[in-house]
Image (cartoon, rainbow, N blue to C red):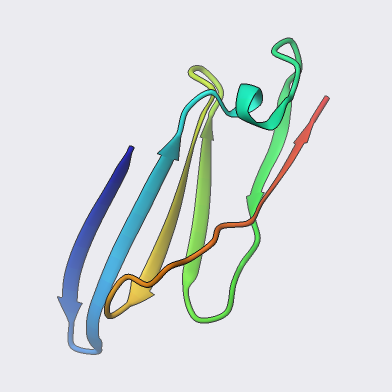
Length: 82
């Protein structure tokens, strides 16, 4: 799952890029009966990064707000669970 939206402001062109990941617990090797208590994105220089976690369907969406064109970006995510 991914989506891309571009928009223009008086300051220039921006791109909002969002990537969704299903079955987060399984992909990270977290036991299914565990509870994820914290999901945080690690900020990177030069762009805004955010993350949301949906507990109901165990999915996460990571987004970047980037000035101008999309470049290759790596999202670092910190997940804590009990």
